[in-house]
Length: 364
Image (cartoon, rainbow, N blue to C red; front, side):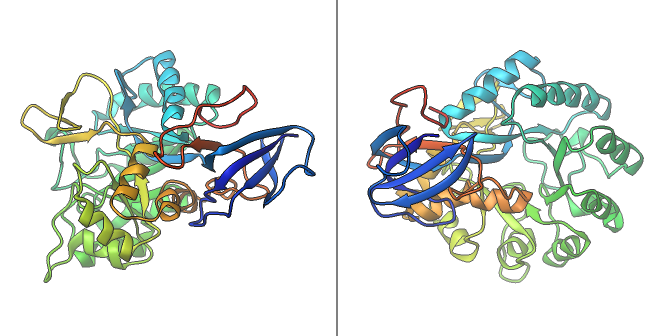
């Protein structure tokens, strides 16, 4: 039953402890935390007073990493990539599948189901499409379509709790039938790639939508007379916006505005893998359309801090906030009863702090 001593603990819920601080772990669960002298807590003491300790990050939208695209890679390649995400602080992730032909999904989901059986950090799958609307972004327009309930509901039922998030557009979901059916099944419905009006977005929230996929990207612009989906995401507390912090997808000032309005917003990487053109720090299609990021969760947090967001709040966007949206009561915080998914990083550079021994928890 080790005690890990850190310079400070970034608790995940927005707070930062005094120095030093400690965590006692038993059977991969946090059983006690505190500050000050930890020497009386356990005999197995791991001194990391040169590093900060935080909860592991939860990335609810990640499409791949390096050469690996989760939609096309083999099980072994996906597993390797998932383990590689730990180096960027992601101790939990939701592999994301973008729009594809309907007959392609069973094979993709079969592979990811088998990966989840082997990789405990895979908590489920995020389907981003193909039921998207008039802001396709990098999604091939020819693959986008109105919701087919006779296809969608048997698919998600077949895979049990594997599919945890579905992004769709209100204009592709007549009468919000899919939103209601997915919500009733406990699946998080996210609104995205849509030109829905403010009122249409709020009607989708009435039907059970609770998330907005990558705020400002893949949606109409915020306008003072028609706030649209961004306006609903920033003002309707039933809808939690996610956002990408590579500072290519969204300007730092826009992120600061969003976090001032919605401190409960969720950080995502929207990281992609495979054979994509990388230009100015992001993946793009040949015509220049943004196709995803190349950033890790910890790099994203570092960007937020550079933009003036307090460290505690920056970490919260990738820990407690996504945990709340997904109903993960045992993740995203450093508190007794939570999982000991922990990451260490340097207090001055916010770079990963390598482990001092095999006993160290976390991604490094």
